[in-house]
Length: 95
Length: 480
Image 1: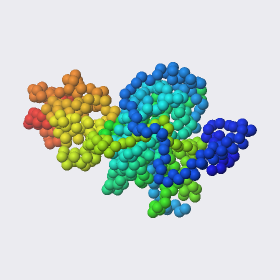
Image 2 (image 1 turned 135 degrees about the vertical axis):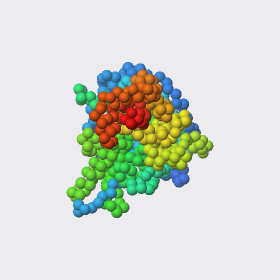
Image 3 (image 1 turned 90 degrees about the horizontal axis):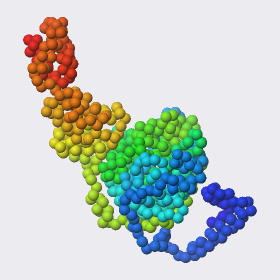
Image 4 (image 1 turned 180 degrees about the horizontal axis):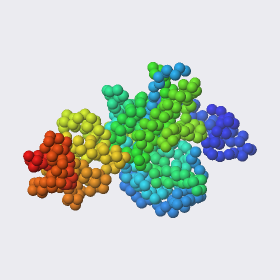
């Protein structure tokens, strides 16, 4: 896969970030290098091998359905940049 | 395109159902509906950095139950996946869901087909995921207010095949789904509280075509009536676009029930890239053959089986049996009183008559019936013992339904018992006869209508508390 300039722009949009103009070329080549590194894997024969999503040899770790106290609302809202009537207040996000 | 083309509507449904667990899917906060804003929250469900999800066992149980009741295959080896999206209703900026290995697949629900017969609506898959928070627009600051109480409430998403061809089929499927899920106890399915929500994928095509048209997705559906209106509105819109030579755009539309029209949602929605990947914070879930067997054996009698039994064993009509079994609550009302010894047919008549009428008049759902179900039996009992007339019983039921009154006490307090003292009845009728000489003469000269008038006057004098047949007999006797 080739990291194009358009792809960098797309990744900026997905990540909600804007790279400084002078960093774009470096980001592009870094990303390309990362992909090349991962590409090493394609040298191996992975025929018939299940993809592994977890390194731990565990399954079915679950908890019982028992209510524990929530935390106080002032703690929930402690880091909110803005709040109103115990709601988080964020920039308008309705059309 | 010629205006004479007839069109076929093709639809598939995505139904989100909130599970009736006590706690959220990944933390131990309560799932109780309502509550002051941000009072059912903790660091996990508000997405604080560094926290880890801890899976609620009951979510897997309920999803398995739902899958078996809906004739699905259960996935033995389950994983969760991360669905990334950036929106304030989701504080982690991703939703934990299942993409690659959903817990249930290849199921189906049988419904009555349009124009008679049965039809199977295929269920493509059911997956487990978490609900998002609630956004409220604040007109004073022109900002959005966020409440995370609902964030992390467990959901199953039931994805159907594109098997629907009419609004009626959609409604029948949803009714069936709701009844089944309520019966097996995995959700209360309260549409007005958002615990059952449907998204509709809809396209149209010329009748006879085997290709699908371009579909739109409609969200924001919160009642069966709104769903029916949305389907009719959106299919008309698409047909108009096509008949004018245009093309339908694949987009998400929001149905506005007040304006009776759907509106395209912001086009940003189109370019969604969820960047799914396996959820690294949750290990896989294995469901054994043994667990599946136990779960299957623990399922109660499902609505379809009940319907058949009501007809074959209790002698109800097909229609009554079908209507009563649409709701766990109507069934409870029926079966609880049946167990107390009241006759099936009489109970069915009351449910199909007065109960349905009160529900439709009040715009309530059966789960909102707030009275003690035994009161219906008590009322029927009083009629059987001739303590009150059938008409009085209907009036008393209104008070039972609306205010939850105990009918026995209500009848006492309002002095509604049928007057059984024949002396008192006779005295009241004698007074009516004395005061209505004109009608008496008319009756004697052969006018049957005059008798009806005198019966009416007598019933009124007795405030409806006498048995009309007794009143008629006494009147006839007095008039010779």
